[in-house]
Length: 335
Image (tube, rainbow, N blue to C red; front, side):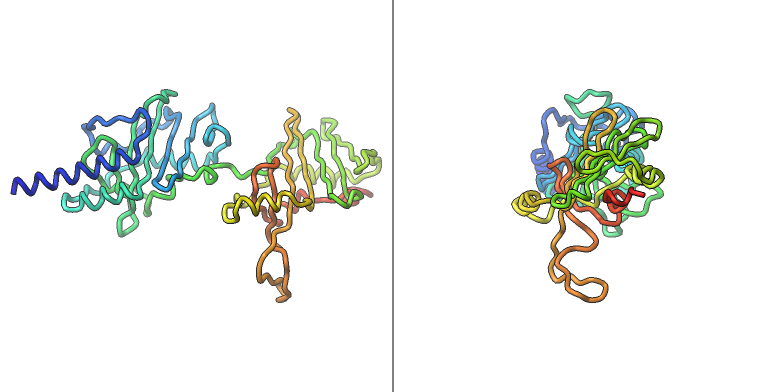
Protein backbone atom coordinates (compact mmCIF):
# COMPACT_ATOMS: atom_id res chain seq x y z
CA UNK A 1 0.00 0.00 0.00
CA UNK A 2 2.80 2.40 0.91
CA UNK A 3 4.58 1.51 -2.36
CA UNK A 4 1.41 2.29 -4.36
CA UNK A 5 0.93 5.65 -2.62
CA UNK A 6 4.56 6.52 -3.30
CA UNK A 7 4.14 5.77 -7.00
CA UNK A 8 0.99 7.95 -7.20
CA UNK A 9 2.78 10.78 -5.42
CA UNK A 10 5.66 10.58 -7.86
CA UNK A 11 3.25 10.69 -10.81
CA UNK A 12 1.45 13.73 -9.42
CA UNK A 13 4.69 15.58 -8.80
CA UNK A 14 5.90 14.67 -12.29
CA UNK A 15 2.77 16.16 -13.85
CA UNK A 16 3.09 19.32 -11.75
CA UNK A 17 6.70 19.59 -12.85
CA UNK A 18 5.56 19.22 -16.46
CA UNK A 19 3.12 22.10 -16.01
CA UNK A 20 5.80 24.28 -14.48
CA UNK A 21 8.39 23.44 -17.12
CA UNK A 22 6.06 24.04 -20.04
CA UNK A 23 4.77 27.37 -18.78
CA UNK A 24 7.94 28.54 -17.10
CA UNK A 25 8.80 32.18 -17.68
CA UNK A 26 11.68 34.20 -16.28
CA UNK A 27 11.69 34.96 -12.58
CA UNK A 28 8.80 32.64 -11.65
CA UNK A 29 8.82 31.06 -8.20
CA UNK A 30 8.87 27.34 -7.46
CA UNK A 31 8.40 27.71 -3.72
CA UNK A 32 5.69 25.52 -2.23
CA UNK A 33 2.82 27.78 -1.15
CA UNK A 34 1.19 27.40 2.23
CA UNK A 35 -2.35 28.32 1.15
CA UNK A 36 -3.08 26.33 -1.99
CA UNK A 37 -6.49 28.00 -2.45
CA UNK A 38 -5.18 31.60 -2.46
CA UNK A 39 -6.00 32.35 -6.09
CA UNK A 40 -7.89 35.59 -5.48
CA UNK A 41 -6.25 39.01 -5.17
CA UNK A 42 -8.09 41.21 -2.71
CA UNK A 43 -6.80 44.59 -3.87
CA UNK A 44 -6.71 44.54 -7.67
CA UNK A 45 -5.98 48.27 -7.66
CA UNK A 46 -2.36 47.37 -6.95
CA UNK A 47 -2.11 45.09 -9.99
CA UNK A 48 0.05 46.79 -12.62
CA UNK A 49 0.80 43.98 -15.05
CA UNK A 50 -0.79 40.74 -16.21
CA UNK A 51 0.78 38.11 -18.43
CA UNK A 52 -1.31 35.31 -19.97
CA UNK A 53 -0.07 32.46 -22.17
CA UNK A 54 -1.34 29.17 -23.58
CA UNK A 55 0.27 26.13 -25.17
CA UNK A 56 -0.69 27.21 -28.70
CA UNK A 57 1.90 29.97 -28.71
CA UNK A 58 -0.52 32.76 -27.83
CA UNK A 59 0.49 35.20 -25.13
CA UNK A 60 -0.35 38.74 -24.13
CA UNK A 61 0.91 41.31 -21.66
CA UNK A 62 -1.44 43.88 -20.17
CA UNK A 63 0.18 46.77 -18.35
CA UNK A 64 -1.37 49.64 -16.43
CA UNK A 65 -0.31 53.11 -17.58
CA UNK A 66 -2.01 55.69 -15.41
CA UNK A 67 -5.75 55.16 -15.83
CA UNK A 68 -5.34 53.08 -18.99
CA UNK A 69 -4.16 49.58 -19.82
CA UNK A 70 -1.80 48.85 -22.70
CA UNK A 71 -1.62 45.64 -24.76
CA UNK A 72 1.88 44.32 -25.43
CA UNK A 73 3.38 47.74 -24.75
CA UNK A 74 1.80 49.30 -27.84
CA UNK A 75 -2.00 49.27 -28.11
CA UNK A 76 -4.78 50.59 -25.92
CA UNK A 77 -6.69 47.77 -24.22
CA UNK A 78 -10.45 47.40 -23.94
CA UNK A 79 -11.18 48.67 -20.44
CA UNK A 80 -14.34 46.58 -20.21
CA UNK A 81 -12.34 43.39 -20.75
CA UNK A 82 -9.70 44.44 -18.23
CA UNK A 83 -12.40 45.23 -15.67
CA UNK A 84 -13.96 41.78 -16.11
CA UNK A 85 -10.59 40.07 -15.75
CA UNK A 86 -9.63 42.03 -12.62
CA UNK A 87 -13.06 41.42 -11.11
CA UNK A 88 -12.71 37.70 -11.80
CA UNK A 89 -9.27 37.56 -10.17
CA UNK A 90 -10.70 39.38 -7.17
CA UNK A 91 -13.67 37.04 -6.77
CA UNK A 92 -12.10 33.64 -7.41
CA UNK A 93 -13.45 31.17 -4.87
CA UNK A 94 -13.19 27.43 -4.29
CA UNK A 95 -16.20 25.56 -5.57
CA UNK A 96 -14.80 22.16 -4.62
CA UNK A 97 -11.49 20.40 -4.02
CA UNK A 98 -10.32 17.88 -6.59
CA UNK A 99 -10.47 14.33 -5.28
CA UNK A 100 -7.15 12.51 -5.09
CA UNK A 101 -8.19 9.90 -7.65
CA UNK A 102 -8.65 12.72 -10.21
CA UNK A 103 -5.40 14.56 -9.47
CA UNK A 104 -3.45 13.03 -12.32
CA UNK A 105 -6.19 13.55 -14.92
CA UNK A 106 -6.77 17.17 -13.94
CA UNK A 107 -3.08 18.02 -13.80
CA UNK A 108 -2.40 16.42 -17.18
CA UNK A 109 -5.26 18.45 -18.64
CA UNK A 110 -3.85 21.67 -17.20
CA UNK A 111 -0.43 20.76 -18.61
CA UNK A 112 -1.86 20.11 -22.08
CA UNK A 113 -4.23 23.04 -22.58
CA UNK A 114 -4.07 25.30 -19.54
CA UNK A 115 -3.55 29.06 -19.47
CA UNK A 116 -0.76 30.51 -17.39
CA UNK A 117 -1.60 33.73 -15.54
CA UNK A 118 1.11 35.87 -13.95
CA UNK A 119 0.09 38.79 -11.74
CA UNK A 120 2.42 41.67 -10.92
CA UNK A 121 1.81 44.38 -8.32
CA UNK A 122 3.01 47.90 -7.57
CA UNK A 123 5.12 48.15 -10.74
CA UNK A 124 7.44 45.40 -9.48
CA UNK A 125 7.71 43.59 -12.78
CA UNK A 126 10.85 41.56 -12.23
CA UNK A 127 8.94 38.82 -10.42
CA UNK A 128 5.21 37.95 -10.37
CA UNK A 129 3.32 38.42 -7.14
CA UNK A 130 1.16 35.41 -7.94
CA UNK A 131 1.03 32.79 -10.71
CA UNK A 132 -1.66 30.25 -11.38
CA UNK A 133 -2.77 27.91 -14.17
CA UNK A 134 -6.32 27.95 -15.50
CA UNK A 135 -7.41 24.55 -16.71
CA UNK A 136 -10.53 23.26 -18.41
CA UNK A 137 -14.07 23.61 -17.12
CA UNK A 138 -16.01 20.94 -15.26
CA UNK A 139 -18.81 18.94 -16.88
CA UNK A 140 -21.48 21.34 -15.61
CA UNK A 141 -19.63 24.37 -17.06
CA UNK A 142 -19.84 26.11 -13.69
CA UNK A 143 -16.14 26.54 -12.99
CA UNK A 144 -12.56 25.73 -13.99
CA UNK A 145 -9.88 23.52 -12.52
CA UNK A 146 -6.96 25.66 -11.37
CA UNK A 147 -3.53 25.20 -9.84
CA UNK A 148 -1.43 27.74 -7.99
CA UNK A 149 2.26 27.86 -8.88
CA UNK A 150 4.11 26.09 -6.11
CA UNK A 151 1.00 24.18 -5.00
CA UNK A 152 0.52 20.42 -5.14
CA UNK A 153 -3.26 20.28 -5.27
CA UNK A 154 -5.65 21.63 -7.96
CA UNK A 155 -9.09 23.03 -7.13
CA UNK A 156 -12.33 23.62 -8.96
CA UNK A 157 -12.71 27.41 -8.89
CA UNK A 158 -15.59 29.71 -9.76
CA UNK A 159 -17.00 33.18 -9.18
CA UNK A 160 -19.86 33.13 -6.73
CA UNK A 161 -23.11 34.29 -8.25
CA UNK A 162 -21.90 33.63 -11.80
CA UNK A 163 -23.14 30.51 -13.58
CA UNK A 164 -20.59 29.58 -16.19
CA UNK A 165 -16.97 28.75 -16.75
CA UNK A 166 -14.15 31.30 -16.65
CA UNK A 167 -12.04 30.58 -19.73
CA UNK A 168 -13.55 33.36 -21.92
CA UNK A 169 -12.42 35.94 -19.36
CA UNK A 170 -8.75 34.93 -19.63
CA UNK A 171 -8.02 36.03 -23.20
CA UNK A 172 -4.58 35.16 -24.55
CA UNK A 173 -4.82 36.62 -28.07
CA UNK A 174 -3.45 40.14 -28.35
CA UNK A 175 -5.92 41.33 -31.00
CA UNK A 176 -8.87 40.32 -28.84
CA UNK A 177 -7.70 42.73 -26.14
CA UNK A 178 -7.25 45.71 -28.40
CA UNK A 179 -9.82 48.47 -28.73
CA UNK A 180 -11.52 48.46 -32.10
CA UNK A 181 -11.79 52.19 -32.61
CA UNK A 182 -11.43 53.60 -36.09
CA UNK A 183 -12.31 57.12 -35.05
CA UNK A 184 -13.02 58.39 -31.57
CA UNK A 185 -13.00 62.17 -31.23
CA UNK A 186 -14.78 64.66 -29.07
CA UNK A 187 -16.25 67.47 -31.14
CA UNK A 188 -13.53 69.98 -30.26
CA UNK A 189 -10.66 67.55 -30.85
CA UNK A 190 -10.94 67.52 -34.64
CA UNK A 191 -8.75 69.92 -36.59
CA UNK A 192 -9.32 68.55 -40.09
CA UNK A 193 -11.27 65.88 -41.96
CA UNK A 194 -10.21 64.90 -45.46
CA UNK A 195 -12.10 62.51 -47.75
CA UNK A 196 -10.80 61.46 -51.13
CA UNK A 197 -12.23 59.24 -53.87
CA UNK A 198 -9.36 58.05 -56.11
CA UNK A 199 -10.40 58.49 -59.72
CA UNK A 200 -13.35 60.75 -58.80
CA UNK A 201 -11.77 63.99 -57.55
CA UNK A 202 -15.04 65.92 -57.95
CA UNK A 203 -16.26 64.11 -54.81
CA UNK A 204 -13.23 65.03 -52.67
CA UNK A 205 -13.51 67.51 -49.81
CA UNK A 206 -11.70 68.80 -46.75
CA UNK A 207 -13.23 70.25 -43.59
CA UNK A 208 -11.04 72.51 -41.46
CA UNK A 209 -11.88 73.64 -37.94
CA UNK A 210 -11.56 77.30 -37.01
CA UNK A 211 -12.55 76.68 -33.39
CA UNK A 212 -15.79 77.51 -31.56
CA UNK A 213 -17.81 75.20 -33.83
CA UNK A 214 -16.76 77.11 -36.94
CA UNK A 215 -15.52 75.22 -39.97
CA UNK A 216 -14.39 75.83 -43.53
CA UNK A 217 -15.11 73.55 -46.47
CA UNK A 218 -12.76 72.98 -49.42
CA UNK A 219 -13.04 70.96 -52.60
CA UNK A 220 -10.44 68.55 -53.95
CA UNK A 221 -8.50 71.38 -55.55
CA UNK A 222 -8.18 73.15 -52.18
CA UNK A 223 -10.69 75.79 -53.28
CA UNK A 224 -12.82 77.19 -50.50
CA UNK A 225 -16.58 76.55 -50.73
CA UNK A 226 -18.35 79.65 -49.48
CA UNK A 227 -21.94 78.47 -49.59
CA UNK A 228 -22.49 75.21 -47.71
CA UNK A 229 -25.06 73.72 -45.36
CA UNK A 230 -23.56 74.34 -41.92
CA UNK A 231 -26.01 72.13 -39.95
CA UNK A 232 -25.21 69.21 -42.27
CA UNK A 233 -21.50 69.78 -41.85
CA UNK A 234 -21.72 70.04 -38.04
CA UNK A 235 -23.79 66.85 -37.92
CA UNK A 236 -21.23 65.08 -40.12
CA UNK A 237 -18.32 66.13 -37.89
CA UNK A 238 -20.17 64.87 -34.82
CA UNK A 239 -20.39 61.38 -36.37
CA UNK A 240 -16.67 60.89 -35.70
CA UNK A 241 -17.33 60.64 -31.98
CA UNK A 242 -16.98 56.86 -32.12
CA UNK A 243 -16.71 54.50 -35.10
CA UNK A 244 -15.50 50.94 -34.52
CA UNK A 245 -14.46 48.14 -36.83
CA UNK A 246 -15.87 44.64 -36.55
CA UNK A 247 -12.66 42.61 -36.42
CA UNK A 248 -9.11 42.15 -37.55
CA UNK A 249 -8.88 39.99 -40.67
CA UNK A 250 -7.38 36.77 -39.34
CA UNK A 251 -8.71 34.19 -41.80
CA UNK A 252 -7.14 35.28 -45.07
CA UNK A 253 -3.39 34.87 -45.53
CA UNK A 254 -1.03 37.82 -45.25
CA UNK A 255 -0.36 37.60 -49.00
CA UNK A 256 -4.07 38.09 -49.65
CA UNK A 257 -4.21 41.06 -47.30
CA UNK A 258 -1.17 42.62 -48.97
CA UNK A 259 -2.75 42.10 -52.38
CA UNK A 260 -5.95 43.88 -51.36
CA UNK A 261 -4.08 46.72 -49.67
CA UNK A 262 -2.05 47.26 -52.85
CA UNK A 263 -5.21 47.96 -54.85
CA UNK A 264 -6.61 51.44 -55.42
CA UNK A 265 -8.90 52.17 -52.47
CA UNK A 266 -12.54 53.06 -52.88
CA UNK A 267 -12.18 55.92 -50.44
CA UNK A 268 -9.56 57.47 -48.16
CA UNK A 269 -10.68 59.21 -44.97
CA UNK A 270 -8.17 61.04 -42.79
CA UNK A 271 -8.79 62.84 -39.52
CA UNK A 272 -6.21 65.08 -37.90
CA UNK A 273 -6.73 66.07 -34.28
CA UNK A 274 -5.74 69.31 -32.58
CA UNK A 275 -2.48 67.69 -31.43
CA UNK A 276 -1.51 67.04 -35.04
CA UNK A 277 -1.99 63.27 -34.95
CA UNK A 278 -3.59 61.78 -38.04
CA UNK A 279 -5.71 58.65 -38.48
CA UNK A 280 -6.16 57.41 -42.04
CA UNK A 281 -8.56 54.73 -43.27
CA UNK A 282 -8.45 53.27 -46.79
CA UNK A 283 -11.45 51.21 -47.82
CA UNK A 284 -11.67 48.27 -50.25
CA UNK A 285 -14.56 46.17 -51.49
CA UNK A 286 -14.79 42.68 -49.99
CA UNK A 287 -15.33 39.88 -52.48
CA UNK A 288 -17.63 37.04 -51.55
CA UNK A 289 -18.33 33.66 -53.09
CA UNK A 290 -21.84 32.58 -54.04
CA UNK A 291 -23.25 35.89 -52.81
CA UNK A 292 -26.83 37.01 -53.34
CA UNK A 293 -28.71 40.21 -52.63
CA UNK A 294 -32.14 40.33 -50.98
CA UNK A 295 -33.81 39.64 -54.32
CA UNK A 296 -31.71 36.57 -54.97
CA UNK A 297 -29.48 38.18 -57.57
CA UNK A 298 -25.85 37.13 -57.68
CA UNK A 299 -23.40 39.67 -56.27
CA UNK A 300 -19.62 39.83 -56.44
CA UNK A 301 -19.00 41.96 -53.35
CA UNK A 302 -20.24 41.84 -49.77
CA UNK A 303 -23.07 44.31 -49.22
CA UNK A 304 -22.62 44.39 -45.45
CA UNK A 305 -18.87 44.56 -44.92
CA UNK A 306 -15.71 45.87 -46.52
CA UNK A 307 -11.98 45.66 -45.93
CA UNK A 308 -9.92 48.60 -44.74
CA UNK A 309 -6.42 49.47 -43.68
CA UNK A 310 -5.99 51.58 -40.58
CA UNK A 311 -2.94 53.83 -40.78
CA UNK A 312 -1.54 51.58 -43.55
CA UNK A 313 -0.91 48.76 -41.09
CA UNK A 314 -3.90 47.04 -39.51
CA UNK A 315 -6.04 45.12 -42.01
CA UNK A 316 -9.59 45.18 -40.68
CA UNK A 317 -13.19 44.29 -41.50
CA UNK A 318 -15.75 47.09 -41.20
CA UNK A 319 -19.53 47.14 -41.44
CA UNK A 320 -21.08 49.62 -43.87
CA UNK A 321 -23.81 50.26 -41.31
CA UNK A 322 -21.23 51.55 -38.84
CA UNK A 323 -19.07 53.49 -41.30
CA UNK A 324 -21.77 55.04 -43.51
CA UNK A 325 -22.40 58.01 -41.16
CA UNK A 326 -18.83 59.24 -41.82
CA UNK A 327 -19.14 58.67 -45.56
CA UNK A 328 -20.02 61.70 -47.68
CA UNK A 329 -19.25 63.48 -50.94
CA UNK A 330 -18.66 67.18 -51.55
CA UNK A 331 -22.11 67.75 -53.06
CA UNK A 332 -23.74 66.57 -49.85
CA UNK A 333 -22.71 69.80 -48.12
CA UNK A 334 -23.48 72.23 -50.92
CA UNK A 335 -26.64 74.31 -50.82
